[in-house]
Image 1 (cartoon, rainbow, N blue to C red):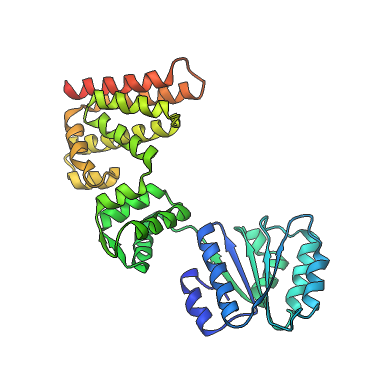
Image 2: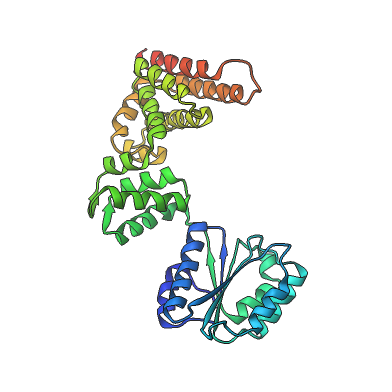
Length: 337
């Protein structure tokens, strides 16, 4: 039996299987699924817990001895087995198969594994786990589904946001559900229940360093050279990561290229904004910049950013920080022409 993580809570309310295997490459969902199982087991009376963290040094006889022994206090117990590598080895495979053939009484077994490929899922030990209990596969949330996932999580804490704000937050966490979870929890601490504004979410999810980098991007597209220079020097003095700064600026230039090309082709502006992932109050400045700068200067700016990237990696000559300054100054000149 395979159970979708979204349906696990409902399943646990109806029954508690003797064995659960949680596997996959999405840490947050794996943690939450395992925690749900542990909580339900504890609530149902499986109060004693034994934990086994299994690596290539693990003595599999310990598992056999524990499964054959009675609970120390005569209570029902939870056997919590963690196999971080996902590869139990020959001895471990045989031990797991034997364990599944005769699951210990008054025991719920929870096994957590990383992502297991098709070949691994066809192995006898994995099939034994599948036949003996319930499997809970956890996979990353697809990028297109991430805004809805964030909206659902906000709803669980009696908050909500419009689609534009949800998309903005999804883009900021870039598919990292653990990061998304932390930001959602932060919103619950910062703001009351109800509708969240775009500005509230933006201010909450961008820490000081990131906020300054995005201000640098704002200064770039508005051709505010004094502000651009001041922020850039501040970031340099704080030891900010140059590759991150460059990635933000290059992303902004790519967005302008997408919008400029689209405008030249007669495409609707809002469609282009969505395609370029430009949200909220940044749209007005971005539109103005895209209409003010020709396609050729934008492409030159992107090539300049690529040159800075090569300098930062040591494969080209020059001072990367000075080139970042020149990028902003030249961009401003192009915008004013």
